Length: 380
Image (cartoon, rainbow, N blue to C red; front, side):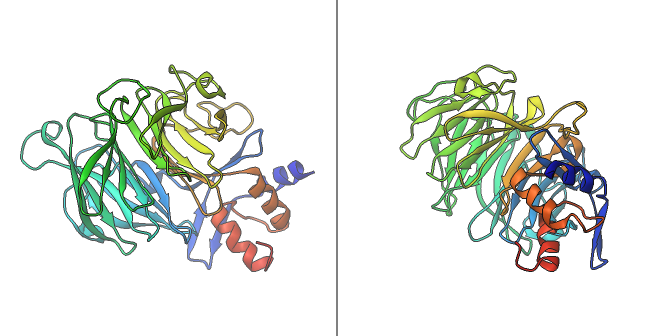
């Protein structure tokens, strides 16, 4: 019965105009598990979304850039009603400032702390030499009103313009340095130190002797472990608070669900964790989103590079991810130039039951709550 209601309502979904101020357009797909995927903002609004984070009010922030010369390098904001605006940045450059006066160069990753300060990794060259010979990564701080400043710098020792970041419980930035194959930390005073890693390779051990290969992204779990998307090793790794590095899942490159090392990934580029310590991975090489339970069981949430007849959403190079306040996934689908929301069955079935008689409703999680609060008062 629920599936019939879902299918019925899906056939009616078009767009929603909140207060006649902004029309939100969305495509929706549902897979066999009842998981819905929505495009909250599309290609006409982004050059190349690379990472996302969410604040407590439901706003989504997106690091957005194009590799072409003199193109867009900025941080965008998606409001709960789907309206997209520029928080900071414009064309490529290296300048602190307010709003569009500030400039970024390859803003590859971003995260947000408990005080709702956004941190961004951005690159620049201090002289007129080639970027790939003398680049420096700047840790930029962006307030919610668009004020941009620099908190720390890390010298780039290679040609890989990628440094993933997250914030630990002490307010330090945790950095996945893809150039040195190390996990670093930057304090609020700008002091940078090595947390784990020695040189390129694969080895589980204590922090000093462990090896990573192009660690692409990091996040913190609820036990203060650092979780690492180890791109070059096709594995998901963990750095404990005591500095012990271990492998959670993955082995050789490929695609397979399973337990721990039985599971296969191909070039993981994004990682986040929910409040139950389930880990979600952007498996870029397979164009899929994967889930790892606390027991190490790996499954596929969604993703397909072809139409399988079930409406499975097609991803193209998914990168950064986060979990929003409703427990749904927000994904930077870089190759498709879209920001997606993945809503799980518990959320979507509930909303279908509540909103089945309201026509032309876009099933965006933030908008769903907005409408439900109006039409169903105390339901949510």
